[in-house]
Image 1 (cartoon, helix red, strand yellow):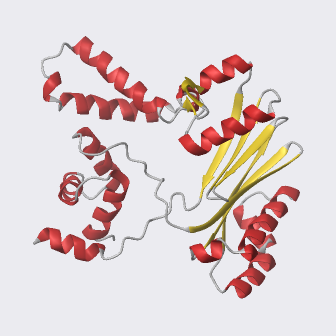
Image 2: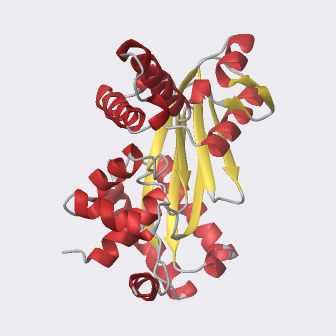
Length: 285
């Protein structure tokens, strides 16, 4: 069972809230971190909890396309020094090539078939190496973008051929980190959960006390749309011209985004915080 210190650490990383606020939230929510995230947001203490966006692991992502098939991969190592080495970069490219040329059904099958490759690299580099994940995308018009030498890699599929637009949109996916293409793609339970959070936030806002129910409902609806639009690709800004949205650019070019994949190194892994216990004890005095 996780200690209260560990739970506070996790909650702080997710929400950016203060230590005592996190402790109070955990007490109110019986040490349920997910519920505590929502509780903090309802009280207006935390921002949108990005539950799986904490970056910690070293390594590289890579994307490659051959014909109508594209692959994006992530390989982890222990240090940034190794991640930048020629041998590690070659390993990531070789592993991606194997996935591209074979129809592996999952990461376990992939690890089995690349075991020799990784064993040899481990001996050479002297670090624990892990083929963490891969994803494939098929389509007639695929484009890729690799950011900062592999910290982020993106694959995107368009309805019509347009290499320049494809690259620019892939760059936008890398920069803006959308979760969905359009609001219609967002699951109903996600929308409902956000509506509940915004409703509670409005109820706790002194400025909105006494507002008619109909007016409050419109305010909640607007807040929900704002939050969801921040993770919806079509509603996000076009990096090359911030005055336009992705939706505007696609309309002008008579094109459509069919799907995309975005990998960021260490995405979803716990971030190690040095001397966190000492920090907690100092706050408790």
